[in-house]
Length: 175
Image 1 (cartoon, rainbow, N blue to C red):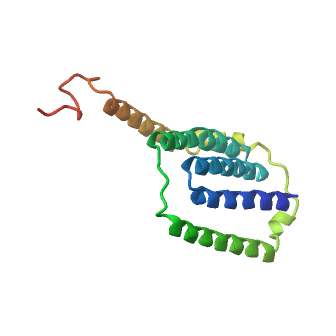
Image 2 (image 1 turned 60 degrees about the vertical axis):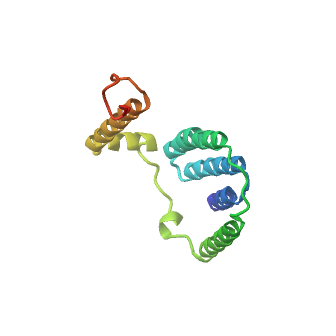
Image 3 (image 1 turned 180 degrees about the horizontal axis):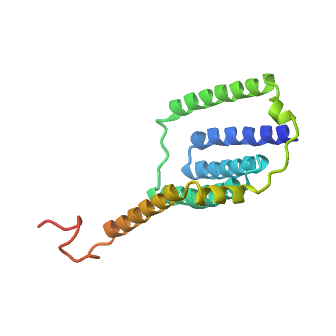
């Protein structure tokens, strides 16, 4: 059952990834990307990584994909026929890679670690990630949060004109 679900999810992920670059209209490409993100989350669920599946849906399907959709709609991209050769080349290379993956999966046997029964984990994935994040990786986690805070404040200062006065900052207009 696990192999069948992996083959389904992997096939849909590969096909929708090809469709992202094959569609002529950008909105269709974004919708194919949405289907791909949902199937990647399903792949995480089959690997018992529920936290990563939730993050995949929230961050990628929820936030980044909406950003892509807004950019596509704001730019009002026109259809262009000049990339047909690149799309055909990309489709060919994608199908070649897909056939290689199918060949490798069909000829390779299951590793012994996967065949043996595994014991149930003591804690869930979320608890394990949280414990590691707030014990072993506490300092890098806090440094990353400070870097993101500084970047956010810098973006706000660059976006708002006159927030620090007319003569302050890099947005000072030259006369």
